[in-house]
View (cartoon, rainbow, N blue to C red):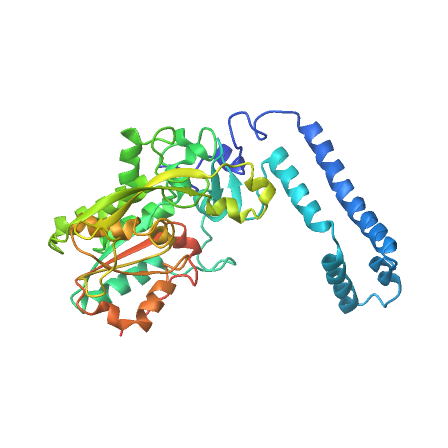
Length: 408
């Protein structure tokens, strides 16, 4: 276990990252880089305005910027002028992309939502913040995400009153599983799990909540050879687990359900069909710059699509199943998007030998998916078990926080 923030101070200072060994955060000539960037910014500042004025004069129009001297400098007029200039400027989009590309190449700056790691790995910034930042004190100025423990216990109790068991499955942040791909030396600093996560897992256990600890499952897999160099459990350019990590999670959940005797193994025969796909990661898309995207080749992978053994048809949910699965985009990947029927839900069904029912809300597993369940109470009919997956970072950053949502 590490200190309060989960990583050492040196690691926290450098998490904004390097893309590879010896990258911009570790070596080079900082002064030359700064001079280069200053030149790029000055060219952008003066070049855009001068070129736009030249284009407008060539088209027989007065440069729009002169409206600054023809109207009163009120807030409304200035904002209207700013919008007009932004919409009329033909060069601005290209300059923005060029400046962003320069920041990425020189400083490994990916913008507001992404963090550049090592060897081409990219991370979603909120998950890195979750790992390295201390949680705000109760009652402090930061927004209160609510009490995950209270919301989970309340949901468990409501389900128990209907004779339904609850199995909680926190999906680890990629940065928690592969801190060494985020920053050199991070993997040797100790267990890279935010202490707040460990505390909540311990509190859930004391409250009698059944939890599948995928942190331990993935740590064992890495120790046995599933490192980033051979069989990564997460995608390099994406927030989500790889097909290998997803199957490992589905196997662990199925084993727990059967081990506890909450369900009996079904007799529906499923097989898998290998389907190769090419995928560009969601973190790469968050940078919103096609010039940067072209620096990264698409990730090639082979998914195992679950099909019925008799008709060879892709897996389909069964609303009447005794198992309901709730979750976020970790359940959607490979399942609802390409190649389809190859995600956690289908592989869980294959492992337990019967189809399941599911309800997925991208980015909303903390509260939104339970709100949707409230609006669709028929989904609980005949259920014996609810499997609830949510990504680790939602413990602090979950959409709509952690509300207590009634069932009906």
